[in-house]
Image (cartoon, rainbow, N blue to C red; front, side, top):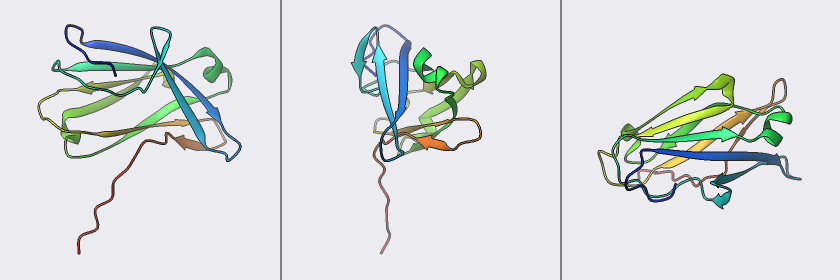
Length: 125
């Protein structure tokens, strides 16, 4: 997400393709410009609306969920809307820190694909 100062709603268009290794490749655009799909949030209760673009919908993709991990996971919630065409992510922005957000899409009768965002695993000694 781009930095938000006076706006609590950010809209992203999402394009999903499958590469030669059968991995999902997610591309995000905001106002026609390619962006990371993440960023810095400064306004409480900011809503990010991620909507699959027409090309992705024609391929049969739909959102089935999201995986959230990190120290501020309790600040976030999500809801799938429009029959899986969009997912809304809400950030309460109550705590400072970083979050890993991975979107999960599927194609009927094929399989689910998860975005390739970084994950961290703690291994206590």
